[in-house]
Image (cartoon, rainbow, N blue to C red; front, side, top):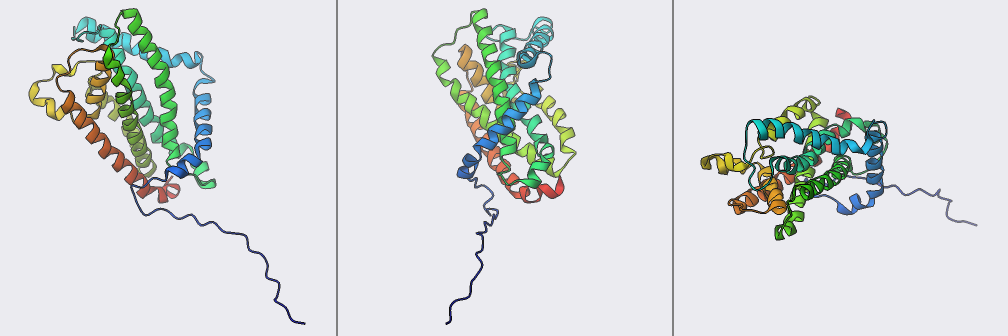
Length: 283
């Protein structure tokens, strides 16, 4: 009696290959790993505030101290104009968005090196690591926004119909933070000395943006070059939506902001996808 020989069963094998498209992001894959994203976010929040003396109050303490220092030196001593807002409120409305940008870049630049053990043991979309830094910074931004709204009530500054545009400028701010966080993570993963450049870059960028001064102080001839800074359109729109008043360069600032941010996002994703195959070997 003849029969077919017994062939041992073979377990299915899943082969993971990198997508050759540099600008394509698998959103379904990112969404499928959302629980892992929240684990990283919750872990970072606990590490950041669990062992601090004042805990979550540090999110409020930092912008308040910055507002007090800048208000004294630039508002009281230098007498910089602030338009329709009191100068302390003017500065605070610039510091709150800056907190999201600066913390996203600072945290994301180190996130790959800090999670090297995860990269070598688990498969997950590498973009989750810089994205988790932005989500953590968004939590701080939300608390700081409550502080800003409370300061507006105390100062008697009530937003008008322009407040309806505030979500648009917050969305622009988030997209810019995501773009720069991804780019900073990739650069620091390949070039380890990039982490030393980040603090200097942030300091220069802060004073190159209308955070402690109004952009109207610049001569008109420098305005087109100044608008290349995407934070100009975001900060001006952020303040305009909260305090109202004229905004003579709205169209120019927004076109420049959206265009530069879109270029940064595409460049960041493309560069991250290009280098992520060799990240583990370089870390």
